[in-house]
Image (cartoon, rainbow, N blue to C red; front, side, top):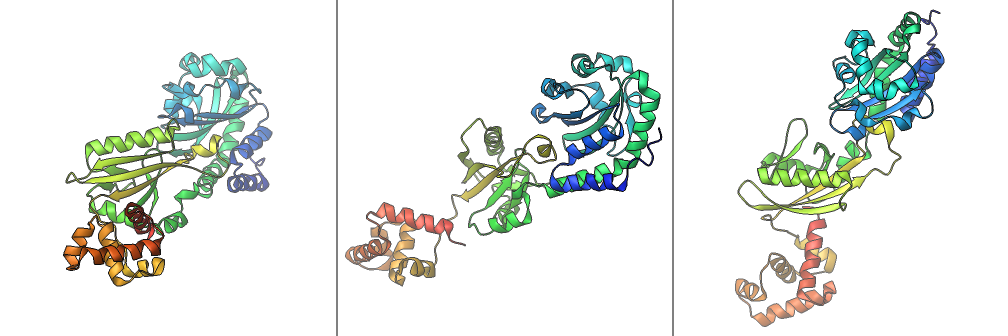
Length: 382
């Protein structure tokens, strides 16, 4: 049967609709199974670094196939290694990449695929590839049906292959993590400290202007041209990466604070917090360069003093200029004696001003006042 005209415009529209609505893979599986009912249709997610990111979606193998599929079957497998050499969208056949005697010896076929039939023949294409991940479509059938099925599969994939690649790109763009957007970066600019949103590989997905300025100084952190965040000091780099890996794995508490050394040995602090997406995630969606885990890194440089304006203290607590000067001195770590000496006034005058500040801020101890001023300084825009 000539399938040249079987892929109608309405089916192509369904592929793009699936990309926009989040049902791309289900649409592909259903469409191809309808067009090639005698073939097994498989979508395989492959990750060369994290086996847990590998996945299978299929039509035609049986209900137990997905449960029995072991994600480590795609690791160190000659069949899948050859697929990495194929460009996106180009139709391939199994005999182009590996002889069948060798394929029958692979764990992928011997330990799993052969359980569902002698499906040694394959025609397919790479739908999408990004860094260490790729998604491959395979149409499988036995040797007894090879000439007819191979020709039909090739004609169908030649027709819809370019559409699948474009639809996958649309899917990736429209299902980005919510913290990867330009809108998220604008929200981060409301914060007064440098903030980075990174993925588990420490690639920056968004950041605020203060974070960008910090990396440009290259005193504590730097960002490479491809967006990866690094610490200047090798020891700090290792500690930061290890912490991100622990939090990303989900085996540790969702937040940690690090005290690290910068270029001149001056300390800086990182608060690293794991953030989960609120949207529905899982399965093949996460394979499109969309690890659901994001981590917020908030940086503070120990040598940079906290500051508040007189106007901010007036608006918040109605402090006078003299009271504001005393409050800022306390925030800077000065004692009452230091303040009296610096301002050439008696200690009693300084104490009276402190009593007034405590009353206006509703604080009962000096430590409580300093903590309140610190929180206000951190939250206030610089």
